[in-house]
Amino acid sequence: MRKILIIIISCFSLQLYAQDAAIAFLYFRNGEYEKAASTYKILHEKNPINSNYLRLLIESYQQLEKFEEVKNTLDKQLLEFPNQYYLFVELGYNYQLQHQQDAATLLYEKAISTIEKSKNQGYLIGKTFQNNHLLEYALKAYKKAMEVNPNANYNFQIATIYGEKGELENMFNTYLDMVEAEVKYLPSAKSYIGRYLIDDSENEGNVLLKKALIKRMQNNPQNSWNQLLSWLFMQQKDYDKALVQEKALHKRNQGELKGIIEIGEIAFNDKAFDVSQNCFNYVLENTNNLETELTAKLYLLQIDIESNSEINKIETQFQELFNTYGKNKNTIGIQLIYAEFLTFKKNEPDKAISILKEALKLPINEFQKGHIKTKLADVLVYTSKFSSALIYYTQVQNDLKSHSIGQTARFKIAQTSYFKGDFDWAQSQLKVLKNSTSQLIANDALDLNLLITDNGIKDSLKIALKKYAIADLLSFQNKNQQAIDTLQGILANFKGQPVEDEALFKQAKLFEKINQFEKAASNYLQIIEINKEDILVDDAHYYLAELYLNNLNKIEKAKEYYQKIIFEYPSSIYLVDARKKYRKLRGDELN
Image (cartoon, rainbow, N blue to C red; front, top):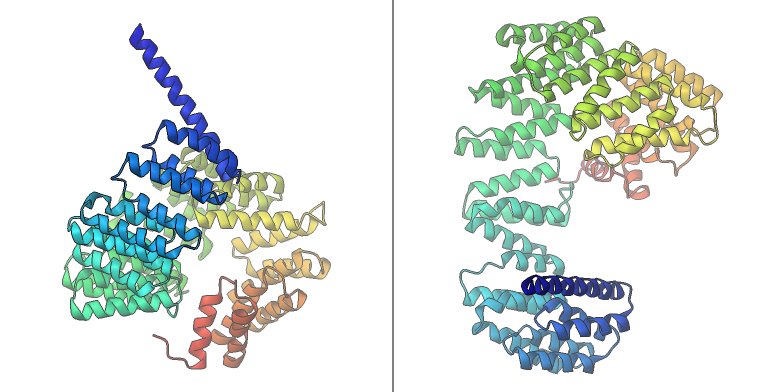
């Protein structure tokens, strides 16, 4: 019974400690430093080995400029625990706050000198310097600790400090030294280095990393440098340069094609079809693996589809694939793309529905079923069979709630409801998706939700929005001219309303689709003229520049609109690409 009583009392005491600590931290966080100091003083006296209580007590006193209290507390702690050498840093910093730099410097040097006799405190001393933003001393401490203890590794801390100091070259070289010593540090190095890179090859961090890697490739060639250089080029969307590095790695380590496949997939998604095609042709030439072969052929087929190759040629390619590999669980990916091709390119949705329903009978897993049902529902939306489509989307959403397939299905439920004019139900689904784990789905959900909200403010009956949703559906169904005509009706009847710029933009994209580039350019110019602060204005500038460059052969006009993005819309998502293209048109040397 006595033992039980002791345990109960101990547990109760611990609970009280935890409550007091929480209250003290709340005081500290809220800037109530008198109350925080008073509470932390009691906690520290009861538990002097808890460094967190001591640190927050010191900080509370310093916020109150009670420097003498800090000195007395630290002197007492050092008297009781003379081996806590890191406290010399705290004591020195207390002098520094009082502008007594000489006294502070003596204590900082004293702390560093103790590392020689107490190897295990090197990290703690370095960290204390770092916590007090004494970065030069922190570097000294970490380097000294590694010098006296060759088994210690504080390179991550050292690299972080170089980053804080803005010494990017030193930081990169520290990470690269770690990778050179042990390749296991490569993923961690990428994670930290990536914070200093953007998708602009002329960014300071990108330039310095590239120089450092090329220098190491020349002095000490190893796979890690090619991998990092490939990764850097991928961040910059220089997919062709990344492919060069991955090919070099493949030739050096025969058999590994993962990096090349990854570039091919990312380049495809970014519509860099030439590079993607080169990747997958290389893969086909260098693999005997059935799954890899099928992946490569599927992407090459999709590139042909996206490039608007001749329909009969693509149909022949599909049939050749089915003749070679069959219609089975291994070719589900090909069957899905074929169903999409039949529906959206050949306008044969009934044939697509039949193929997908047959595919559902195969011995496949729940994820494959989710993909097939989603594609089947897409085809049903194409044929305006909304109720049937919603049944399939809902099955996928219920079966794979936490998976991206399920979240995609939920978005498509919202989109289909929007097509039908059921805006309230669409928004109820879209609000759930704003926190989707897929950034792409979250962004699409936000865009559609904003469209519905913005166009419902001045029009409670949502007449314009209903017509716009019809145009959107016609566009989805590849009925491009009907969609254009519907949008023209909106522009004639709802001028000056929020839907106007959306209709102009949608119509411009459809004009591009049917090669009416002058009309598309006219729409973009109208968006710019309506409101220079509109959310679609930077998009209009960018796509107008792209039209002038790629379709209308008006190079000077293209330069003009790329330049406008650079100077007038510096927060635009198109800034980096616009800058790159502007410099190229201007004749700058681009590495």
